[in-house]
Length: 97
Image (tube, rainbow, N blue to C red):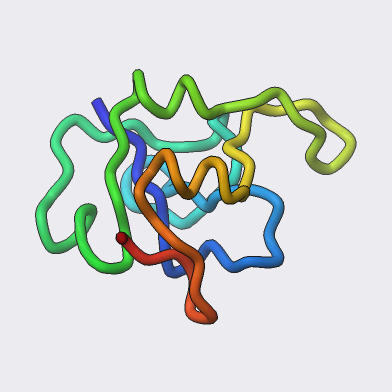
């Protein structure tokens, strides 16, 4: 099982990584709203713009953080997280290293 990180929709100024919602229906920041995908589709869920991450790996990165005055589980958009995911930030968003 996987979460999908939207690399191109995560910009440097955002506090959290952007995740796909269930059924390819938009984007979110929180684990509570993110979709869990059984088998990511190469070229769609796994592409230059998107990256699947195993639920077990993502669970190590989620932190209980404030968002819209509510505490939610989100992945911080930090250099430490980028390094653990083997991505880097560019002016166009995150890219795989």
